[in-house]
Length: 279
Length: 235
Image (cartoon, rainbow over all chains, first blue to last red; front, side, top):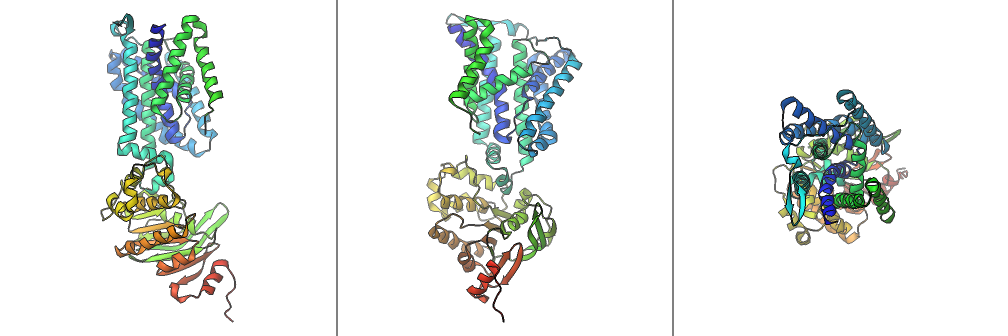
């Protein structure tokens, strides 16, 4: 029981890591990015390619994948999302849905539909013992990474001049421009951070379990659920939301594995009924 | 300093500003008055760069800036205090000022000077801007523009939704800004306040100038006629 809760907390960190980018893009640009999960899966495939191409271990692959993901995010914002956001409320949803389909099909063509996983070596299989519980190094590292990333993002937004401009732009883009804020680069950076965190989370998910070109959908739903349960616009809330998801999943799995994912969705609906999301 | 030449701006099919010209000198205040929908705000937004004009030009020190985006005009020294304050609601008072500061030109204004201007603001600087009253928010909005050290300050409906006493206090600041050589272009529905501080007044009606000159050269009746579009009794 306690083991399940601890495992749930650790996995929840990774859910929160996927979710924070989604939350950030929505909070700042009002962009609902349906392709977010697929971009996370792309991160896992890129790490796979780095491993196959250069024999790079996952940690080294990070150095290659993260800057690339940041660049892809910024480029998507400047070329695609920016236009979609000008097209009304529905346009970004449709455009990112289209992007999602494109990514899935490109992955199937390029990497086949076979499930894959990232090889984390001995580290991924090893564990350590705390108070009678055996914890996996990999999941602990995933959780620690999530806490560090969310904490850094929080500090970046709360304490720096850049963060201040991001928040100002989120409040009122026009007033921000009147104060001299260059809104396009701000948005491009935020989209870059969003996709980079997605790719990072995707790599951890790829190390923990298998993925295929269609894994993005479930990842997206989990991310949405974490954001909604934790409350929109709060990074720590997102972490809490991720943990609630992870714990629910693990606890229900103790009883019956078949209902684990379903339980998470039911919980999500429950939260929506009790506390509807305000626009 | 600032010159607007035959500027026209549209809202869709509707022409909001019609071939309007004005010029602004350092240390002077120019008031644009007119009823709701006369095109005053659109004029200011076009000068600030938020509303692309359909024809005509905006010049700063003789340089054409008609097509420049607003964020670049800020660095050139044109700052707009927008209608309805438009503070960054989730940011504190101080953070609002710091955002206004980030492309600031060299000059006397910095957050400390704004706190001297509005002493009560200093102790409330850590509060979210959304918790302030309308008058207090207007003060922060002015401060946010001032810290950029503008050469041309555009004020859109300073008095909107504020108590007369607060409006008077805000207008009492203007002479101190003009002393420093700042040029002020203000748009108002509240004619009496605007007329007191402005050295030139321009009245708009449906996007066209109906009257322009020094405030003391006009009788209240003439102003009223220009404001509402009544025929003046010239006979």
